[in-house]
Image (cartoon, rainbow, N blue to C red; front, side, top):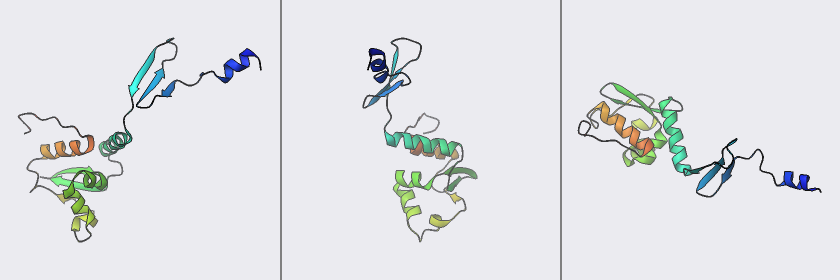
Length: 135
């Protein structure tokens, strides 16, 4: 094996991203030695982020919550895993909500639709922005 064949054997051409444990390194093409270091999100964060995108695009949603006539599509599994209230509601066969395809009215529990937006966003993203107006 000559030196050219050996160099090709250990060449990283075509590879531009390397797993470095908790982060990845991307070698930026055409930029010489420039590298982009990026902390990898953990698997659970990626899954929840994907579910949030699905909710925004109204994909795979299996429950509709209703507050003062405003409808909110969501995923039972996300709601149940984030809240014991929803886990109880969807996890027991004797609850009408466990099997229904009708809207679940939460108007008595959630006083305004803006609050429901905040609650759902928090359940899906683990982030919430509060201010004097919404509190």
